[in-house]
Structures are given as C-alpha cells and as structure tokens.
Length: 165
Image 1 (cartoon, rainbow, N blue to C red):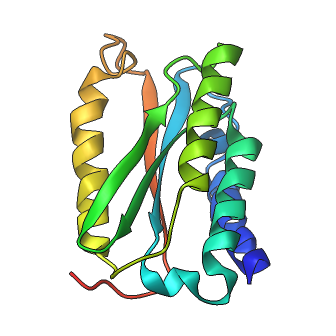
Image 2 (cartoon, rainbow, N blue to C red; image 1 turned 90 degrees about the horizontal axis):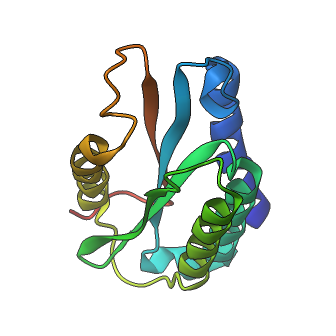
Image 3 (cartoon, helix red, strand yellow; image 1 turned 90 degrees about the vertical axis):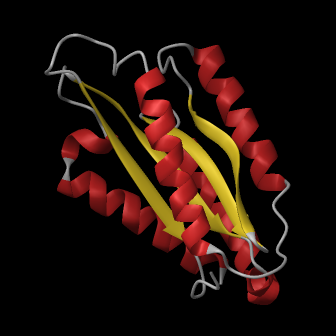
C-alpha cells in the first residue's frame, strides 16, 4: 500500500515537472522556486492498510527529492478542521542551514501525524487558499518591482476519501 502512495506523489510531482520544466528544476532566471503546499488527509480511514505510513514515507521522500528546488509546506486535516503544520519555506533556498532547518520541521511534523476522525477536505483546501492569500504579499519576491519576477504556487492534495464537510 505504501508504494502506491509514493508512486502517486512522485507521479504528480514528476508529471508536473515534465509538463512545466521550470516548475521543479528552475531554468528561467526570472522564476524563483515554486511554493508547494502538501495538504494531507489524516482521517480515521488513513489508519487502515498502512495508508498513513505510506503517505508519511512518500512525503518524506518528496521533501528529500525536492528540498533545494521547491518551497514546501504542510497542512493536515481530520476531525472537524484543518491545521497548518509547517508554513511554506524556506525563504532563502540558497542557505543550506535554512533548508536543513525547514526539512527538520517538516520531518518532525510528518512523524507526529496520527489518523483520527472525519475528512474535512473543504476546510483544508480553504486553509491552503487563505494561507497563500495571506503569505504571498509577505514574500520578498512578491515585493520585487520587476514584473517579470515570478513564483508559482501549487497545492497537492493527498486523500483516500470523500469530504465530510
């Protein structure tokens, strides 16, 4: 079961990176590292069949694979709400310490994920959108006066069910 999650996440990321070469491997000098918010289901059904363990492994592998090319964040959802666990980051992708610190935050948050409750997927997607709306204006790149400077923003939803909200 875990290998199916890994294949799913990597297929999504690699599919997008093949469709948009500058997305994962930035070749455009005016395009900075993309933001990727991982929105993950940790509802009760994720405890069945090794789904949560597979998802955790897939997230950690994804973080390791793309830690220097993507700014990654993490939202989990279960019960009645969604939680922002790790803000998209790091701010400075060229600073090895900042990258390592951010990876450590993500690893800690992923290891603490527990499956419980229902599937408030709508709340999770709304949180991802609201978070981007609040954080994009704070991004130093967003304040750059050069209109050619860009940063792409992506949300990757990983779930095994239908929303309960």
